[in-house]
Amino acid sequence: MIKPLDRIQIIVIMLAALVVVSMAGLLGAASLTEAQRDSYLVWLHSLEETLETRQAAGLDEQPLLYPMGAMASGPSDSLTSGTLHRVALALNELESRPRLLQEPSGRTALSALNRARNYFHVAEYDSAMAWYTLAAHRDTANVFRQELGLETMVTAVASGDSTSVTREVLATLGRRDIQGCREQLILATRFLVARGDTVNLRVLVQGINQDPAAITGSLAYWQAFALCRLGHWNESLTMLQDLVAQGGLSYGLGESERAWVLVAIPDLLVLTGQQNEAGPLYRAVAQSTIPGAADWSRCQAGVLDFLAGRYLDSGTAFERLCDRPGNFVWRPYACRMAELSDEMERLRTEGNDNGAAAVYQR
Image (cartoon, rainbow, N blue to C red; front, top):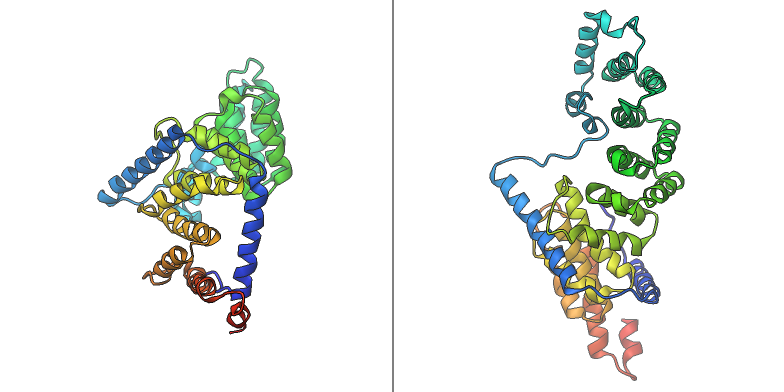
């Protein structure tokens, strides 16, 4: 829960926002085209339909599970259950068939790959990494190149070893086959973002940018996400606008990822000096039923009204948020902003050259 902000803190935040907006305006980014606005609204309505269909069926949102969910042979059930019991059962099953953990006489790439998978299934990631490395060494004809690339990255991420992940990232980029390594690059991006490793994330982003034609769909989403985290706002915005220009396609992204796009685009518009373009987008999302995104957009629309001197509009918007029932995380902020908007409106209507000082002293 966000702590309530006092009036001085809010004023400081608003002044900082004004500075950001004025500095961003110097970038001189181009305005949105009508086609870009239409594409944004199509993306919005597509997500609303997805939500309505799922809710009508009484289903919960299915998040994209990483790293296990990235690999069909991975123990996705053990990840979703969150218990050691299932891992223990898997271990007992393997112990009942010891031949699976034995090196066959052939010593082929496939045998090493199978043994690596067996160790992965029982969460022995160090041993799995060793066998994946051996499998790659034996796979001189690159028969299992794609499987080895993804599964080795999954194992490195599952182990939580940032050194192993970094090594796999460099190895993947060194192949210069971005199109064939999309899954492991997405996985690496998510890992580095979660770890806050901006140094290696920057290397990964630069490497992916070497093949612009491959940056489509879900890879484009995560590339834009990473660029945003690194502060490359114009590049991230351009990529997201290109992403939504395809007519509302989901690209296999989850509902949360698609909702992030809806708030990231107007946020980035503000950060690049296009707050007038951001307003209509915020208001469109604010009228939707998309959890989280609608609340954030209502707050942001109120902030834009405040910054533009429309204190009555901002006060009304924030009062509605303040009075909203339920567990609303932004309520303390909204209530304080409603008070500040009302005070700013009083200062404007009551203050003048002779009486402004008295108003400030109240």
